[in-house]
Image (cartoon, rainbow, N blue to C red; front, side, top):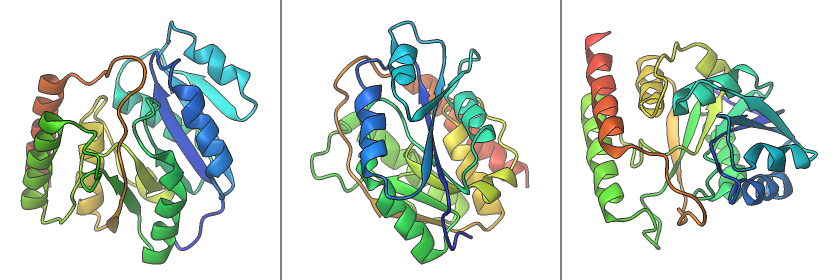
Length: 228
């Protein structure tokens, strides 16, 4: 449970996000009211992302040559010093100004994890097929694991550092996010949500491989049922 927050570690995985990363980290730096550190875990970008991060005086850069969304996040979390970890993408699609709301909710609810749900976004910026796919995955997760979450695939989360240290996360790519929820559920950790919004990516191309990731996510859900 999280009753207070003394330091927040923001972990952002990047791969060729030169067009988006500066706005994302600057917004966090200027709007976050809690003491914080910003950790960028870069997968050997070739477009100048690393140079942009280095040009700030408030970001820590870690190079993670091993590819994979989950792998990058785990590396960042292993280097985080905060009692709460924020995971968020560096593509500018999440409303990072909502970090304060997430942390407030975490303290108010004494929760172990807070998800920023995009399902209530009035602009529907996620796109129809991604929206429907997310709904299906979330319905299956909620049904199988007796939860009432609305956006299990949100990559924008506030996580108790103590709680995540108590679970063994092995998935190296997109299924990492689902594995986290499964293992938090098994330990009866408290998971809540806030309503958030979603924005259309301004620069670059999404890294998500939809078919591959969907298979991995459902496989992870099945494994979670088998491995009690």
